[in-house]
Amino acid sequence: MEDHSLSGQTWVIFALTAVTIILGAVVFYLWLRRRRFTRQRYAFFAALAIASIVSLVITSITSQNPWYAVASVLSYSFGITNPLSDSNHWAENVLVLVMGVAGCYLIYKIFAIWDGGQTESGYKLSPHFPSIVDIQCGEKAILL
Image (cartoon, rainbow, N blue to C red; front, top):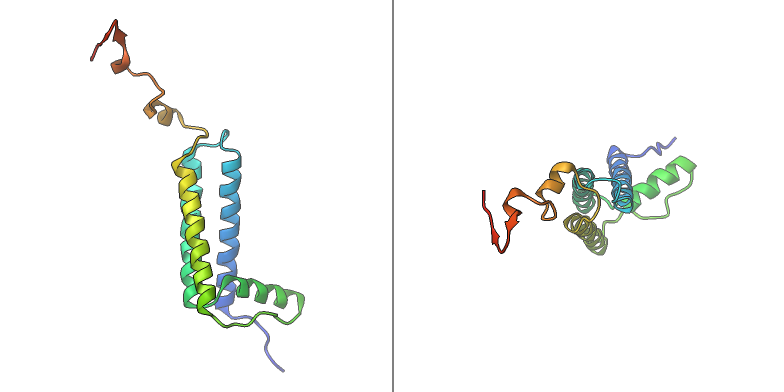
């Protein structure tokens, strides 16, 4: 009788892919509700998402692609044969790398141009918050 169980490596890549998709969804949700959530909350989940993307890209290039792991787990769960081959072609590695770089760049650019909610300390550091140095008397500024 043959053993049709999956390797631990496939389960790890499947879990890493699932975590990356979930963190991407959380980052997207925080961006959609940016008026309600702060930049710091976005930065926390964005850092986790970028770390997850980088880990997924590295493991994909060194072992197997994420779509093969997902297809393997789904085919194992439903009792069907996996339609994908386990080959790790260079074009698939380039595709994974390009998708990873594009995802990280998009997350970073959203952080860089964040126009959503701010914490009180973040607002006080912004140029829109008046400070004592900005008090003007006539034409001359009074520096205290």
